[in-house]
Length: 415
Image 1 (cartoon, one colour):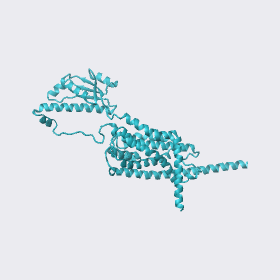
Image 2 (spheres, one colour):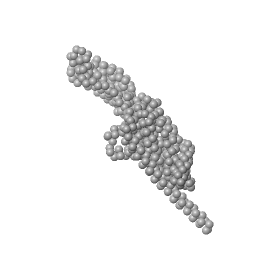
Image 3 (cartoon, one colour):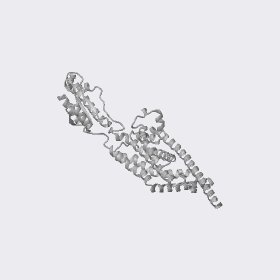
Image 4 (cartoon, rainbow, N blue to C red):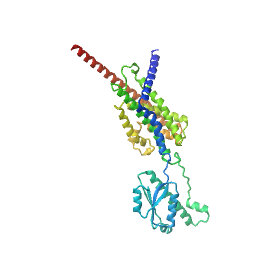
C-alpha cells in the first residue's frame, strides 16, 4: 500500500510542479518569446524569404567582340532562358568588370572575335564566363545557362554537319543516348525544399533549449540559493516528480509547436509532404522528448540565463552542417560526426527529411528513431542526476546558512 501511496504522491507532486512551471512560463516574457513567438513567426519569415526556391532573371553583361549571327544567337538563347537576363552590353572587358564591381550585373559573357570563324572552321569555339562568386546561387544560374546554351548550339551544328536526311536520323546522331532530367526529393531544385525542412527541426530544438534555459535562469535568479530546486517545499523533495512535472509543461507546449513546424509550415509554403501523420507522430515524439531532456540538462550547466542563448546561437550553423543536409554526411570528418551524435537535431532532421521529402517509411528511418529514443533515456537520466545534485547543493547551502544565522544569533545573545 505504501508503494501505491508513494506513486500517487509523486503524481500529485508532478502535477503541482507542472502547474508552477506553466505559471512561470506565462509570466516570463523571454520564455514566452522563445516558446511561442519564435517557433510561430521565425519559420514563416525564413520560408517566405526562400519561397521562390531558385533565382530567376539574374542580370548579366555581354561583351560581344564577334558581332556575328552565331554570337547573336548565343545571346538570344541566354536571354530567353528563365535564369538569366542580358541587361547590358559593354564595349570591352574592363567596362564589364566595372559594372560587376558596382553590382549592376552579376556576371559577364565574353564572346571573342574569332567565335564564328572557329566554329564554322571546324575548330572549337570558346565563350568566357565571369561570375560574381559572392553568392553561389547567382553563379549557378549564370554558368549553367551558358553551359546549356552551348550544348544546344553544339547539337544543332552537329546535326547540320551529319549529312543525314531525316529528322529522326538527325535526332539520333545528335543524342544517341537520350535522357530525361527529373530532380528527385526536391522537384523545384531550389533551396527551400532541400534545406528548410532541416532548418525547421533545428528551430524546434534551439527554441526549446533556449526557452528552458531562460526559465531555469529565472528560477535561479529568484532563488536566493541560486539553484533550480526550491528548499523548504515538500513537493520538491524528490527528483523524478520535479523532472517529470517540468517535462510535462514543455511537452504540452512543444507538441503543438512541433505540429506547426512539421505539418503546417511545409503545407503553407508547398514543401514536399510525403510522410503520413502516423509516421510523423512516431518521429516527433522521441525527438521532442530528447530535445526537452537535452535542454533541461543543458540548463543546469549554465550559471546565467544569457549564457544558454549565447551557446545555442553560436552552435546553430555548425549543427545545420552536422545534420548532413547542407553538407554531405560522407564528407564530415569522423570526430565531428561523433560530436553530432550528442544533439537530437542531427537525427531528427535526417529522419524528418527522409520521411517527408524522400517518401521513406518508418522502417527506413528506424536507426534514427532508435538513437532518438536512446538520447531521450540518456538525457533523462542525466537530468535526474544533475537535478539531484542541484537539490543536494541547495539543501547543503541552506543548512550552512541556517547554522551561520543560528551562530550569529547566539553570539548576539551572548553579548
